[in-house]
Structure formats: structure tokens, C-alpha cells
Image 1 (cartoon, rainbow, N blue to C red):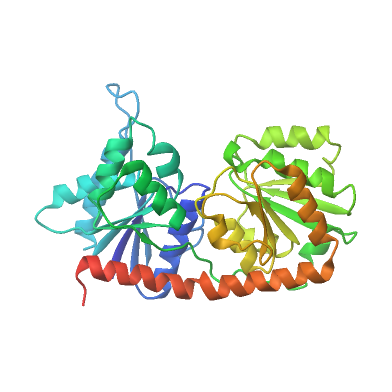
Image 2 (image 1 turned 90 degrees about the horizontal axis):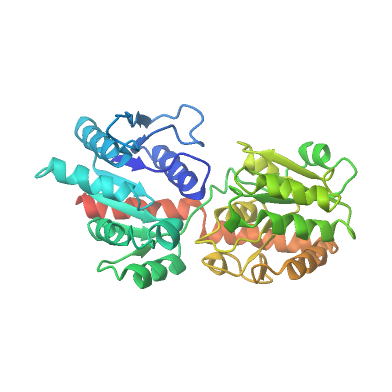
Length: 374
């Protein structure tokens, strides 16, 4: 099939999932066309069957803000005609599904089947804003297929928007052949030459991710167990987290690495992942850690309980409960056998429930269904 994909290309879960989906589809001999304003961050090398179409947004004195939604709709329609797309897949409702509706209307009577995947803040934050709610509901209902990344998000969509359409839950996925357990290479020794335990946090450092809680947890852990903390990513809370590390006197043991392309290697070299988010519609980085045989300690919020079973692949802790998260971390890091066993169970869960080989066929079936393919 010829599949168009539109996503936010920046550092964030929805863009990562969309990009990895495109790469997996290309591996299965589908022709994939990304339509967005910049190349997706994880599309960092040429891949057969993957093409990028830039959306150019021009500024005019009449407009306070460049009309990206209109430029995107125009580009979607152009690519759909030029590349004979069978389906257009929009990740994140606002504004992508709105632009897709406009593109579809421009091309009538020629069909352009549209799939919209709901990822999280497009529903729980942006879309729920009263000024955006009606257009978000409309664009979702006008899609030919709608998916969400968790049951939590599906239920939140029905509750917030009262949409009159079906929503299929298709979980996020991980390539279990790329995200692998620690291989015994030199990265772990490079990070912790003294054999310290390695904790890791990966996010876009927005307040909802609570990176300062990560530093608070670590400051308690390192008092009892020699350890280092990797803070991977960037965003508005980074400077506050750096300040807190200095205040707690752990700045030499906390490494702020910024945005990285080697996420899998960094996670695999770690012993424990911390994700104390205020809310998560799925928690992709937790799944990536599980695939790497790394136990996780995460908040009991949103879709995370659908990914992590408390006491099996890691621990679920109430959000903002720094003391409990630190206690659980010390409990695991202080028991090598339990840490290892929990990591193995995490890897097994990732392989059995969330591996790309199990999830991608669900998208392929959806595309075929709405495009009328045999």
C-alpha cells in the first residue's frame, strides 16, 4: 500500500511512534510518505520505501501566525494525488486530522481514507480546551478510522468529547530486535566506572513528566546505594532539575545528556528506569526499557497500568509520592537477583504483548479495511 503519515516531527511520543510505524511498514514493503514541516527526529537516515514531503509555511503581513493547518492540508492533497496514496494516517488530532478533513474535501469525489491516532495531550489537554473541543470532536468523527494507544485514552475521548464513532485500541509497540538487554559492552563501565547502579529518566522535560521528582528520588537512593542518574532529553523543566541536583549536592552524579539518538543503548546500559509522570496515555519509554530487560518504576496513572503490572515488570506508585518511589528503587537496586528476575519478566511481557511484529499487522488490517483493499 501507499501510506501517508503526518505527525509532529519533534521530540515526543507521538512523533516517535509515527516514525517507527513508518519504518516498520517500509520493512514490510509498503511505500511510506511522511508529510510534515521537518524530517521526523528518528528518521535520521535514508530508508528504502520512505519519502519525506516538506510542508512549507509562508508568512504574510496579514497573518499574526503562519497558517500551518491550511498549508498542511494543501500539501496532503498534493501528495495524495501525486503519489496515489491509499490511506492517510494522522498522528495527533490537532491540527492533523483537521487538515486531513480539508484535504479529503478538496479531492472529492476521489476518495482519501483517513486514520486518526489519538496519542494523549491532543485529547487530555489541547483538545479538551473549550475553544478547540468542537473542531476536535468533528475531525475525529470525520475520520474513516480512529485508534487510541490505550483503553484509558479511548475512555477519556468518549468522556470528554462524546464522539459518535468507534475507537480501536492499538497499543504502542517496540522493535524487540533493536531494543535488547545489556550486551556487556563498555558503555555501562563508561557511565559508571566504579560499578555504580545506573538510573535513567527519558522525557521531554515538561512539567507533567515531573523530572524534579526524579532528582528527588535519586538524591534519596544515592545516600544508601552508590549510583548515577542519566537525565535524557530536554525541555522547560531541565534548568529547574539541574538547580535541584545542585541543591541536593548530587550534581556530579547526575548527567543531563540532552536529546540523544542512542536511547536504546543508554536504557540497556541502565539498571532501572524512573517515570514519575503526572499523567501518561501509554508510556512508550517504559515499554522500551522493558524490552531492554530494565525494570521500571512508574506512576499509577493513565495507561501505564495497562503496560506495567505492579510487582511483575516493575512498580506502580502514586504520582508525587517521592518517598515511595525511592523506597521501591532501593528495594530493587539492593536485591540483585530480584532486579534481574524482574527485568527478565519485563522483557518477556514486551515480546509477548507489545512487539512490533504483533502490533503492526493491526494497523495493516485497519488500512486495508478502510481503503477497501482485498
